[in-house]
Image (cartoon, rainbow, N blue to C red; front, side, top):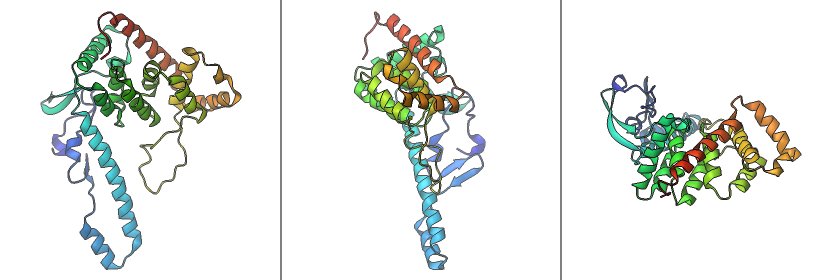
Length: 288
């Protein structure tokens, strides 16, 4: 697919870029090819020229960066093969469309959200090994599949797999950290010790996606929104006394200053709304 024919990606329905077009021959952008992996001939010519290690080192750095980008794109590609997507057309273009409107899942009390929740429950019920499919949604960097994965995780019996996948997504500083924290508090039987462990460390981000340049050195990145989301749930839902320690209070003050988003309020509110919906649905069906 050429850039001029690439479908628009600004709407909710088309929330993924077309990863298929990017997996062959390099990484393409709106302006053309951004980076093509160097061939053996490239290295041979540079070595023979005697211009030395600087260029070779630079190529290797860029190659590692490209390989990482390619790995991330392959993971996004796998999302399209899950039961939560289907082949279709969007504005005249063949595409993979989400079967669930993730934006509606952000407001569980609304009637339109309940319809989407029923869709998720039905998809999970009709799927073999739904936990593995959910883990694929949670393994990408895009936060939108994380929302769908959070809701789907609530309907799965085999929660050991989804709990691990949810924490892994949370530890990477997802934009859906509030929903991930809320979901984990509902499905992880050891949520309190797991959450406290992260709070005491300042919720460090594992494998930060934004640090793509091999020459950059970043010793530590912390997820302030994730910290506040865990804090809010532990305080308002679990009434955890250990939050009153001076060390944790100092961390909370610092994290609160790093974000304007009311993550604690959002996490607790979303959890309460989802829990209310699940209680309404309980007489109708059981988890899968």
